[in-house]
Image 1 (cartoon, helix red, strand yellow):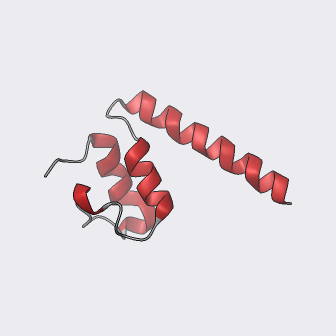
Image 2: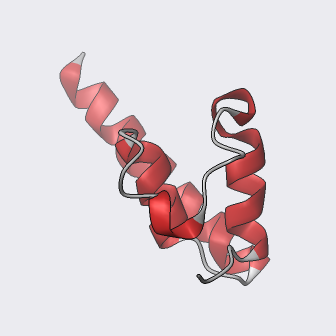
Image 3: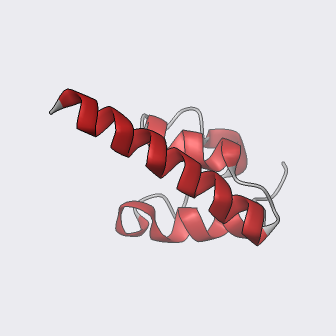
Length: 69
């Protein structure tokens, strides 16, 4: 079993108030929260790159939200 990188571990610890702290790398596709799964797949081990990817996702979500309103 592989390990989470630093950014993934942070997400697992803080996302949904830590609801997914117990999740193992081989379980991320089976937990039923696609946003959590997306974050875990996309996050690079490089902190700056991980933060950049989160910002890009947030910007895309905001654009979708604005289009829906």
